[in-house]
Image (tube, rainbow, N blue to C red; front, side, top):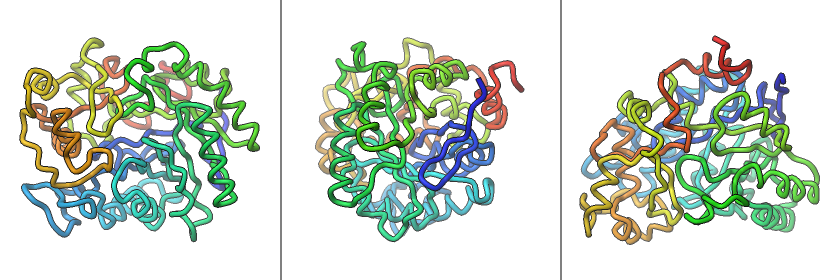
Amino acid sequence: MSFKSIKIGKHEIEYPIFQGGMGVGISWDQLAGNVSKEGGLGIISSVGTGYYKNRAFIEKDIEGKPYETINFYSKKALIEIFKSAREICGDKPLGANVLYAINDYGRVVRDSCEAGADIIVTGAGLPTNMPEFTQGFPDVALVPIVSSAKALKIICKRWKQRYNRLPDAVIVEGPKSGGHQGFTYEQCFMEEFQLENLIAPIKEEIKKWGDFPLIAAGGIWDKKDIERMISLGADGVQMATRFIATKECDAPEAFKKVLIEAKEEDIKLLKSPVGYPARGVKTKLIEMVESSPKPPIPIKCISNCVAPCKRGEEAKAVGYCIADRLSDAYMGNTETGLFFTGSNGYRINEVITVKELMQKLIHGEDAS
């Protein structure tokens, strides 16, 4: 099977492959810029931009951490990240990922538009008011992430009523993805919630509203997986974990090494202060959290990153601060870092270029 280009709103992407947004600092200018350059859709994560270039663009930090939401989600840094990515990919489509669960969601969506995002992707909640924050940017395509036909129905109904518009595409994410899941812990292991069983009902829901692309995500690894998703009714795929193992990925070498060394049994569903199960590598941090009756690392909530955490209350209940631990991973601290990965992360055994990876995804594993 040869892959066709895909149109998302007014933007045409050469190959139907989205690179999933990964924060803190895993998919920024270098990774996203190079994926778009090679014909996919590079997606910049808006999470923790205050850490970009050693916190060079923020107004204030405390203990080396961006202070408050305004600095953790730094607009100046986001603009610089997009500017740098544009130098790599030119005018090819470039996306931003903005989690719905964050504090200042609306502001960060608008910041992404002003920074130059062509496409905005939102998961971690139902973004029923997403179009409100992109007014004045009619060319920016809006793509929610859902885990059920019911969720898509709610979004379409609200968007149509309030804003007279529909999604430009929808990402359907199954429970094998890295990071936060749109399912309970138990649902992640139930057959009915696996990605291949979500596509058909969501495709049916799309037909009730018109026609826009369906992008399948979660556990997709190679060309065969992409072909399988397309055969089930998807128009394209989103992949994240495999892009970590590229030379251009913004993650440090220590992060990539954690994945290369991870075994299948090391990849677990973890509790998270965001309120959803999250998939990552069971590292020393997780072992410390699981064996200690209280948080092994003091929790101060300096960055105030996500609304469900309630200013550190949920972090204390779970045993770690997600902003601090993800930023530790970005800085290569394997002792206290939180390393998210999809269920296939253990299959990573080498680091290659984005160009090489895209060739393998488009032409098969033997392509170079």
